[in-house]
Structure formats: C-alpha cells, structure tokens
Length: 278
Image (cartoon, rainbow, N blue to C red; front, side):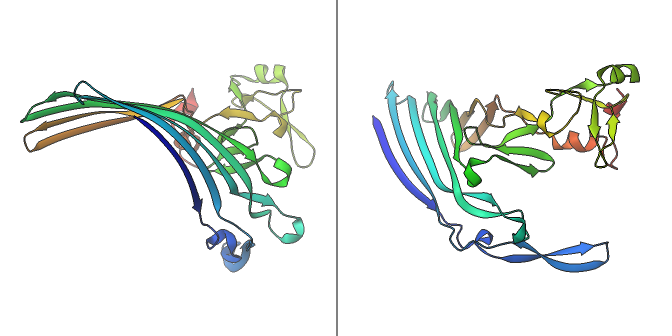
C-alpha cells in the first residue's frame, strides 16, 4: 500500500498582535507609571504559507498481526513571520515582517505487533522512530543573522542553520587559583575602557584570537533538535479492563538547564547550590 499526499496550508496572524500598534505599561524608578510604545503594527503582513509533500508505504503481515509503516515528508514555509530591524528613528529595535523562509524534511517509521489476540486477552506492542532536519533559508535585512533571548539562553537564527541553535561562550572549567588566571591573562574591557582581568573562581572562557573575552568569541554551543525521536508502547486488555503504557523519547538533542543557570550561575542575588563550593 502506497500513500502520496500534497498539502498547502496557511496560518493567519494578520489580525494578531504582530499587525497592530500598541502600548504597554511600564514602571520607572519603582513609583512612576506610564505607557511606552511596544510594537509598530505592520498592516501588510500576510499568511505564512506551508507547502508539504508526503509519501509513504504501509504493509500488514501475518494475518494483520504485524503492521509496518514508513513515511517521508518535505515542506517549505514562505512568508515566515520574523523580526526586521528598524531605524533608530522608529523608536523600537524591530517589527514583524514576512521576510523569512524555512524548509523541513524527515521520515518516520512505525511498527505495531499484536502479540496475543484472543477473545478475552489482547496484547499489543509497538513503537516508532523518526528524524527531521530543518533549515532557515531566508531572513530579513539581507539574511542577517540575529540572536534572541529566551529565559537567559541566547538563540541563534541564521540562514543555512537549523532553528533554535544555542549560542554563547565555550568554557573550560573554573580558575582554581590566581596563578592559573594570571598565566592566561584573560580579561574583559569595561565601558570606560579599563581592562578587568580574570582571577581565582572566575570562569575560564575559550577565546579565538587573543586574551580579550568579547562577543567575537561566541559560537554555536548546542542544538535542541533531536537526531531521533519516537515512542514505545504496550497495551494489555483483559476483557473490559485495559492497561496502556507509552514511553516517548528523543536522542541527540541538547537541553538548556534554566534551573542550574539560576542556582549555580553565581551572578545574581539568589540562593545558590553547594555546587559552587567545588
């Protein structure tokens, strides 16, 4: 059995907040309230359009006790909603536009097996495995890459790369004493131009060219997209009693640990774990 499909879907955000100009409440110096411009509406926003092509094969074997299915898919999203840089005269850094595009391709395989199929008892086992790869193919401002901050994590958007890459500084442990820090001679440059050198207890950041730690040293440090994903399941039915278990998994994806950032970051006035004593 072969399955072929083509799907053209649209997602409407024209009448959402992205297309409207609105103000938001702010509080200045803890006691002065006011309103500030938070979005400049773009009335030319269009629907995001996704073209999707799928193909699959399915087989039922051994008196329909074994079912195998394999599916391939490819999709392209045009008019992708993305943030476009504004001139400083606009009063905001950016506004929403339809200047992005994204492609996505992958496959999934599933297996269902009826291990026991009697009038009173049925046992069914199965699972699935899938893989996908997405890539940004267009961005605003002549495909200029940018980063977004999500709960303290920097997310890179870059043409030719997957969606949602973690971006930041590579580290190589912590300086255990002042002698090791002085030997490396790494430093940051403060706003007044003064150099601040690293010392005992400071993080040892990996630099690319010299001893100065700056934005040029940031690289891709993680990918949240899994190499494989899927599920395993088992169903047991005894007359009118059913027991179902499902185990979902993903492999090869990186995870941002927000809790550790708060409790082991050492850069804010929060209680810290004993991990900082090591």
